[in-house]
Length: 316
Image (cartoon, rainbow, N blue to C red):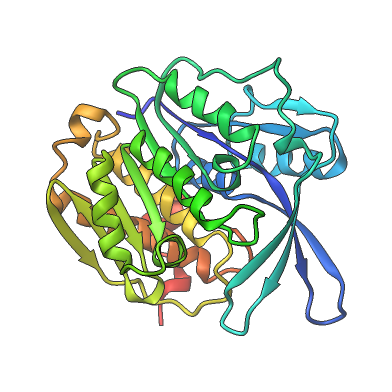
């Protein structure tokens, strides 16, 4: 059974526009932080490993994670200001982002004070901006490479075209992460941007060839496809009235890791033997977690008791 999942990467503040008066609301976010939050709410022992500012925004991030049960023992205090993301909401509820990163807490790792994985780490997950931008990317790459041989490595690219990184460089960095990972989730939009001349599933099949045991492609309302052991399984999306998609992919990732943990599959040897049926069941669970998040404003993933009891947001 799962001992601990460690999530590494950025936490930040999402500045979300308020339609009624033109003001902005500051909400704790960041893809890795959202994944850690969702994992803890689903009842899994979860540690977050990052640099958080001592400013008011950083304290708000800490409080939200702690309230959901995320362990913060390995968070590094930073004097730099918190990282910010300005959110633009589309008519369909989809969010786009612009980032304020330079000189901020999550992207100013000094040579000293680099993180180490805690004892009892069964899986380590990294993703998003921290997997691309230096010096954070090298810090987390070194961290993952210290993991024990049986520890599962998972990765979620969460591609952000707004970053000042060319497509080719972005693609090369993503492929390096994929090659050292066991479980990878990408959206069809991620893959379409990285490989504009190739169908997303074709790209995912190539990623399997780089080494991961499991590659998953989420396709929004069109469902999700998982690749494992030469098999491909597709499960439909869970129907929900979408409020917005903020945190949906992060919640899916948490649901997937949580479902694998429940199957005692967060072990590299067991993961290599995962059946297509077991993956399909895990994808259905993860899709339910993501759907609940889509039915709420902001990155507000469900708690375990909500999933176990059946969530009201998914009815009707």
